[in-house]
Image (tube, rainbow, N blue to C red; front, side):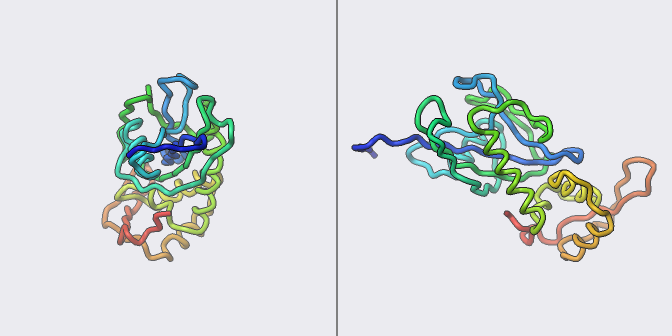
Length: 221
């Protein structure tokens, strides 16, 4: 298909925020840029949209190319359109975010990403473009949704303890939660079932392992 426009038009990119929780800490997936602008600077995965793909397909393609991560569900976060946000040209970015268990990921950077790594949300490097602003908005959205939905369960592996799950909610809220109230709330949702197995990680009494009764019953976003 040939396109011809009378007026100048902007390029469109996608940026993807990938959250996980590791050892009770909220983490974000970043790539080190292999090209200018901002060469060797950490950034969110993403890139330019092709003429024959929609925004979500672009985000999924860029995420796989730059990190090796695929088959994830993305939620659209916001459209960032500040005039001078990219030094190359007028660029509008559609941002997406997703949640994933860290155990499910093997990072394999490719194309224009020299490296891909997880970073603690409390210890981030300087970010390229306006990616700090994008990440701040995504973190606020995640924190809000964790207070009224069950999306926190998306961080969990197939089997987990209630303490593991509480650690996830504490990591996203960045504050401790009352153990009794949290367990009463999560069990009242009737989404979990005991596996019949227990897990021990030290001298304390082994903890019951749980799993989702029905993975489709959990809020996607």
